[in-house]
Image (cartoon, rainbow, N blue to C red; front, top):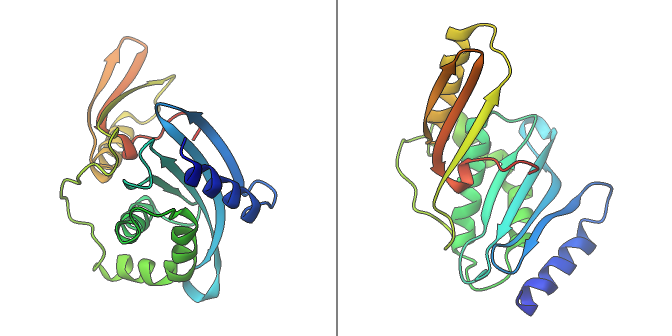
Length: 195
């Protein structure tokens, strides 16, 4: 791992030093580093919104964009995707320099505006294909095993909507009592276990 990246990680650990604000999820010489930051940002009507931001810094970071996953109990899936897209747009202007802290500060200051764009429909909810943002991103496949399903029609519709929102393709397979969902798509749209 390059020295500037190690320095950035040390600085982030010092900045986000509150309870559960910072956690390194994985570190590898070949895959880079994945970590989670919990931050608060001002949403509508001055209400604080908790954001869980998971960053993947590939080996050749900061020469390429980091992978970003955004989760929040207070935001819809579409809003989380819009926040992610806006963070990556902002990251493009910061290439070749450590950028994670700048991105966290930017979303803390601009979340309200990003959410307004989503609400008014001017956010990017178009169904366009996205270009992979990091060198080792690509097509990922995941297999989910469900132990039961109560309302099959409603559940299938929900899975289809999620797959569409996340630009994933896949199959829902019923094999006796075994229920499997096979999903294929961009790495950033497939949530890795433990993240």
